[in-house]
Every structure is written in structure tokens, then in C-alpha cells.
Image (cartoon, rainbow, N blue to C red; front, side, top):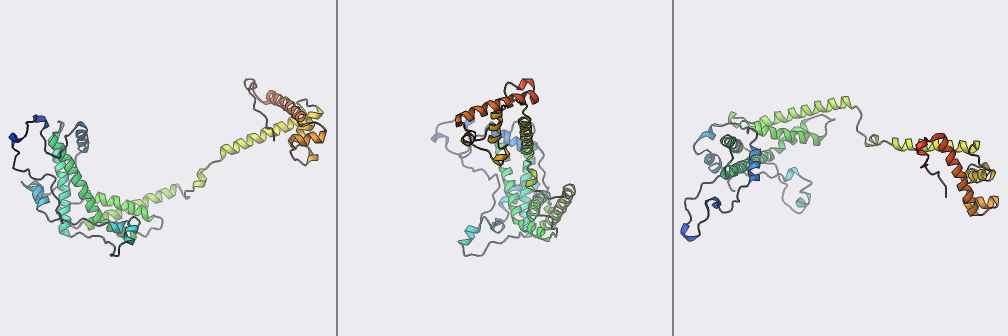
Amino acid sequence: MAKRQSPHPSKPSTRPNQSTRPRRPASSKRKPGRRRINAADRRKAMALLIEPVFYMDAEAFHGPDAHLDIFDNAPAVMQPDTAWYHPLINQSVASDQSSKPAKSQVLTAAEERILFLQYNFARFRLEQLRQEIGDDRPRDSQVRQVFDWYECSRNLRTQIAECNLALVLAMAKRVKASDLDFGDLVSEGNMALLRSIDKFDIERGFKFSTYACRAILKSFSRLGMKQSRYRQRFPTEFDPLLEKSNEPAERRREDEMERAAEAVHVIVQNTADLTDIEQEVIHHRFGMDAGAHGRRLTLAQVGSLIGLTKERVRQIQNRALEKLRDTLSERYLPTSDRDTPEPLFIPN
């Protein structure tokens, strides 16, 4: 089991022999394996320190060898196994293994103290670096320290949260609210757990679970109040079908029906001065003839009915439609729109 190392190990005392290699400019001297800090790295480091870093202070932070006592000399804490928390993800892996399923790990009071001291010390060092840098341009060593301590604090926060995931599930099962979704409870509880990690003071001597359980239950209570206010404003359940509107299609259909009624009125009243043969062709073609039982006849059928060829019936139909179009344009369209009239529907 490897111990968690401090972000800044002690420097080696040996120095390379300068006579065995060519001398490099002073600006290019840097440790092997470390890349040069550029302007983007400095901007990222300054962005991490834009706001004061909150931490829970402890007496152990102000000793001469605080980072050695808190990190290097502290016992190692086993990393948690969260396979039990993601059964769907690990289903295929678990099916191939005959071992027992993983269980959640419960931290002892000593292990909690180690992790919280390390987590808050990392944030304590970030705040110290923020005050040291101030408004000046950070040095390369300071930029590297910012990145190291920030990554260290993130890893420790994740480890503490993963060790206490069972608290969220236990508190979620205790809630007897039927109108709250279990997934929403778990999500809200996880956020409360992370906030509890940031605000917990290990120096007071309490277990973290005592503090976190109260915070998680309070977050569930706030979620229930939020859901009740939402249901008062929106008493009906969300229905995706109600969000779909067919108003444009209905309006277009009504416009088409009105235009068709106007065209039929013009044909019946013969206000377009159609001849008898033109009226008969229009009546047969558009199903307006009662003798044809309202059926639309083809050009060939109309031609055989009145004794004309198919092409001649087409010519009569086009001439009658042109008269109807002109009449409708004069009655219903403004003068500016009469040059580009809409074509009337011609059945097949």
C-alpha cells in the first residue's frame, strides 16, 4: 500500500558534474521531465487563485515540517472501491468474476483525520501561494506548486466523497416522500456531501458522518419544498403532446376551405361568364356535377361523356380556369398582387 506523497518532495543533494556536458544558458536550466512554464500556464494558475481559497485551519499546518508530518509521515489510507455504486457499469465485469461483490469502505476516525488534514492543508498552501503572488507575475516554481496543490486537493476531495457515498443512499432511503424521484434525491445528496467536505472541521472531534447526514437531510427538505412550490404553480404533469401545436396547419386548412368555397360560389353563380361547355367541363372535372355523384372525372372520361377529345377538354378546362382566376383576382386580391396570381388546383 503506497503512501500519499507530498506534492513537493525533498530536493536531491547531488549535483551533476558541469565538466561532463556543455554549458547551457541560465534561462534553459530546468529539472529533467518538467516542461517549461508558458504564458497559458500562468494564466491558468492565476485563474485558480482569483478568489480566496477557503480552508479549515488547524494547528498542525503552522509547524516547521507540516507537509512532511501530514503527508509523508502519516499512515496510508486505502483507496475506496466504488464498484458497488455503479452496478450497471460493472455488470459485464461482475458476471465474469466469481468473487463476492465489492462493499463500501467505512473510514475510521483516524483515517478521516488524516484525509481531512491533508485536504485542508492543500487548500491552506493554495491560499498561502495566492497571498505570496499577489499582483506580481508568478515564478515557474510557484505555478508548478499551484498546479500540484490544486490537483492534490481535488484527489483528496474525491477520495473522501467516494468513501461516504453510502451515506447518501442511506439517507435517500429514509425519506418517505412519494412525490420525489429517487434519482433526484441521490443527486441532491451528492451535492450536499461535497459541500459538507468543504465545510467540515476535523479539529472539533466529531465524526464526518454526523455532520454530513444532517446536511444531506436538510438538502432533501429543501428539494421537497422546491418541488411543492413547483407543483403549486404547475399542477398538471408535463405532457410532451401538449407542447405540440398544429395551429399553422389548421389555419392553412381553413384558408384553403375558404378559397375553395369562394371558387365554388363563383362557378355556381357564373360570375366569370363561363360558356355552357366550360361549365360542364368544370363541373365534371371538380366533382360538382350531381349526376356524376360528386366524383372527379379524368380528361378522357369527360371527353367520352361530352363527345370531345382529351386534348380539347384540356384546352376548355384551361380557358375556364383562366376566367375564374381573373374573376377571383379582381374580387379578392389587391392590385399589387394581381400580376402573380396563385394557380388553381388542377386534379389529375
